[in-house]
Structures are given as C-alpha cells and as structure tokens.
Image (cartoon, rainbow, N blue to C red; front, side, top):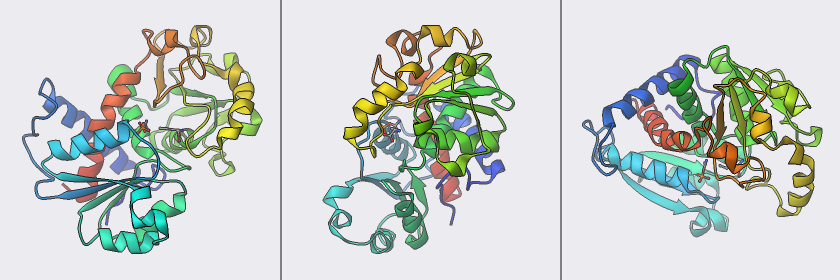
Amino acid sequence: MTHFLDIDSTPQDDLRGIIDSAISIKNTRAGRPKGAPDDDQPLKDHMVALIFEKPSTRTRVSFDVGVRQMGGQTLVLSGADMQLGHGETIADTARVLSRYVDLIMIRTFEEQTLLDMAEYATVPVINGLTNRSHPCQIMADIMTFEEHNGPIKGKKVVWSGDGNNVFASFAHAAKQFDFELVFTGPSPLDPEPALQGLYTIERNPDHAVRGADLVVTDTWVSMHDPQSARERRHNQLRGYQVNEALMAQAKPDALFMHCLPAHREDEATSAVMDGPNSVIFDEAENRLHAQKAVMRYCLGK
Ligand code: CP
Ligand code: NVA
C-alpha cells in the first residue's frame, strides 16, 4: 500500500519521481480545455473520496478536477456531514470507505487522524493538510520553483511568519530535496521542536532574506488556531510582513510564494503578491498537476 502522508515519510527518489511526473503531466495537457480528459485514463473506473474536516478551495477543486481528467469519479465529503463528525471512529470509517472507493484524500485536524486512516484503510490515503503538515502544497511549490528557476538543490529558501504546518512540510522538503531553509519569525511562533535541525533561525527578517532564492509566507492564523489568538499574532508578526522593502533584500530573481488563501496587507502586501517575483497562481495551478502525479504514484499507475 503506497500512501502519501508526508514528505519526510516518502522516499527521496519517489519524491523526485513525483515532481518529474507532474511536469510531464502538465506539459502533456498544455493548451487543452480544463474539462478535456487526459490521453491516458489511469483512474478509469476508479472512485476517489475527498474528505474535508476544514474549509478548502484549492485542494477541493484541484483534486476533483484532477481525478476527472484522469477518468475517475469523486465523492466530496464534509466531515461534519459524515458519521465521523458524530462519534464514529476513524478506524471504522477507514474500513468502511475502503469497501467503496479506491483512494482516500483527507484534510483533517490532528495528524493522528490521518495516520489512523492510513493504518485502517485498505486503499491508499493522501494527506490534504493536517495541523502538522501540508505535503501536497509543498510538492506543487517545489515544482513551481524548478519551473521558474531550475533545480532547488542548494538554493536558499526563507520563510517569514508563523512556524506552521506549511512551514513543516517545507522543513521536510529541505532535507529531502537538499536546500537551505531559514525561518524568520517571533520565538513564540517557532516551528515545532521535532523540526529542529532541518532549518536555521534568523530573527531579523532583513538579515534572513539576504541572498534568498525564494521567499515564502502564509496566513498568520491557521484554520486550527483559535480566533482569540488573532490580535496577539498580528502584533507578533507585523514586523515579518513580506513587502517590497523585504523582497529587495533577496536576490533580484527571487521568487515569492504563498500557498493561499492570503490576507492581503497582513502577511504580504498586494505589491508583492501581484509583483514580478510572485508565482502564487502558478503554485495554485500546480496543485492540480502535482496531485495527479501523487495519485498515480499511490495507485502504481
Ligand atoms: N493552499 C490550500 O491548500 O488552499 P485551500 O485551503 O483552498 O485548499
Ligand atoms: N496554514 C494554513 C494553510 C491553509 C492552506 C492553515 O492551516 O490554515
């Protein structure tokens, strides 16, 4: 059984294979209408469950469209509408769903929910974001970086802001794809201790960004964070906003990324998000191609 649970638990060669496959999938479809089927239909007669316990725009639509382009069908399920949201265990849910569908993608809160799903399902399981990580996003981000600026190996990536789940997948990727990762943010919002050794810390954002090949940020308040933390976090993170002055410290051809959704003028200004270095909409598009490669990998297609 080949799950796609996290970047740190997927073999390095497999990760590289997924990126190469994603680029090839994208190139093969270039210029086609979005609804046109792929030439090959690896998911023909396959049913895919997409479970969301949190909101989503990109993950929901890109997985749904990707499955359809590959000839499969989807069931988009809200956790709250399932018995899962009313006390049924994840283990029983996993065993039941495995009798109906060929693949499960889940966006959930605790990492343990994802791990339980993978343990008890008899079909592959894909992580569509947990409180801990967001591996599909970072696969799309690696693909996007390499499309624009070549191999990411040896490059300097700077994360400015909250040490959250998206940062964690960047940290996993730094080891697997061999790039330098610098975290700049306030100490109360440092990444989880388990990630130490995968990145360095520089509290001064101007110093951190010097010579960067890629500058990344994300929302200051994630979906699993209490809304009551909002004001405090804004005060803590205001100095880490990615604006034109900060981007000016990076290399002239440095890319700017944000997984979206963004809060414009908070973590990043519109001048940066819509500026010449920004590749945020390529990142969003590449979710589609990267996840098609992930699904093919999981199904051995
Ligand atoms: N980046 C991302 O995962 O977006 P959604 O929350 O819209 O799926
Ligand atoms: N860190 C954000 C990412 C959203 C795609 C969150 O978890 O809400």
